[in-house]
Amino acid sequence: MPRTLFRWLNRAKFAPFADLPGPEPTWPLGNAAAFGRGWPWERCADWARDHGGLVRIFLGSSPALVVSDPALIGEILVERWTEFHKDAPCAALVPVITRESLFISNLPAWKAARENHPLRQIPAEPWHAALLEPLRATLGELGRGWVERSAAGPLELFDQTQRMTFAAFARAFWGRAVPDTHYDWFQTLARTGSWRMELPDWWNRLNWFSPRFRRARTAWYDTYQQYVREARARTGPADSVTQADSTAVTPTGPGRGTQAIDPLVGETPCDLLHVTLAHGSPLADAQLAEALATNYFGGVFSCSSALNTALWQLANAPGELARLRAALDRDLPRDQPWTIAALTRCEPLDHVIREALRIAPPVPMYFRSSPSDRETTLGGHRLPPGTNLFVMQWYAHREDRFWEDPHVFRPSRWENGFANQHPYGSPHFFPFGRGPRACVGGDFALFHLRLALAVLVSAFDCVFTPDSRPVTEFFFGVMMPRGLRARWTPRPA
Image (cartoon, rainbow, N blue to C red; front, side, top):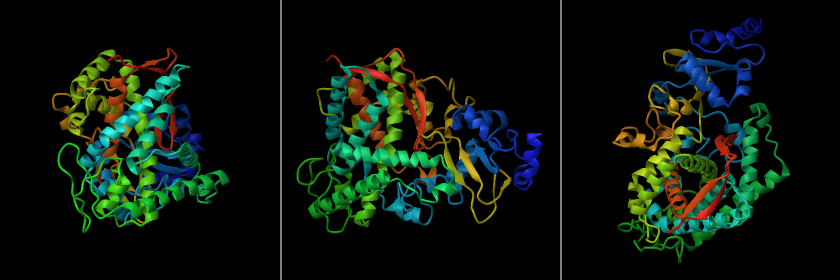
């Protein structure tokens, strides 16, 4: 009876999807009740296995499609990306981040935001090369702090990796260590955004925010605008970035010289803010501050998630850990300076990170919507205006028809040219997305993950408590493996 009643009450909405397979919806929740029996990406993966690559579901009376077929995902994210725009959770994230932000804007505003974003304006490798040793020192210092604190008891790993990533981002973006108040503001904004993602759009459009959130948001953006003003005042016409492994990169702005600068030290620090200004940015102070500050929301939680997964999986695969350490000792000796070339070409390190991102992608699913002003088609099926699409990255990374033993952590699967055959953004492996809207910070995230994992694995021993088990949480659109507690000690020389 509930199934019949649902179909009758929603017959007009059901009709366009009558030719698509899917779980039978029941009155009054449709298929939404199934999400109470597991995480949304796990439930959607079950439906993909049961019904195929394009599955019809109903959340209450609202239809949506679960898309797991790689070719259809390619249409949505690559070939026809201009048709399928971002809708949810955009209303939830304003004004945690602004409507013009690269992460939630759509064409035409998105195009300008992407083209002018600092991470697109400068050459990534020379910047990473200049940052490598200063960030290595920062990460090592933070790791030694873990050793001191864990002497009194095991530490919750995710809390530590979040703070470590936040501190590394501060050094890389602004060229300075920031007070704990900045981290508190960041968490307040993120908690508000995450909470709003669980609310209906009609509530979010009321734009109600607590006084604490408003104070944190004002302080967050005002502080970074002040950093921009200070940097603009000190950035001279001869600023540039030193490429640590080769030659200096000449800024592209008019009238810029080629004088080298020291990374993160000296008169002209080599952080993203100063390098962007040296190259010439068309962004006003408030726009540049927002572009840099929003990178925290795009990267801190997801990088922390991937780092936690890698450390946990390595702890449970001692052979893989020993193999990685042998490669790090050979390619990146602890008593010598590191180079970006050596960091990048260390294949066991690269393969561990790829496998961590594959087996537990920090962002397990993406959301898109069909055009709101017209019908369109997907896979030969007619879509009414504004149809919501759940793009299943989690399923693609674990589809057993493509991956051998997909639930097993096996970095060696990426050997013998497999990594080159299936790069980031390929049909079955896209932890940073696919197509033009792939993560603008993907290159920096990989640099940070390589460096952080190399520092932690080569310099420290991590021993998890016997009761440690990854407990999944979903926060700000990111899957967080919590529940992992560990003690840290220096690794013998």
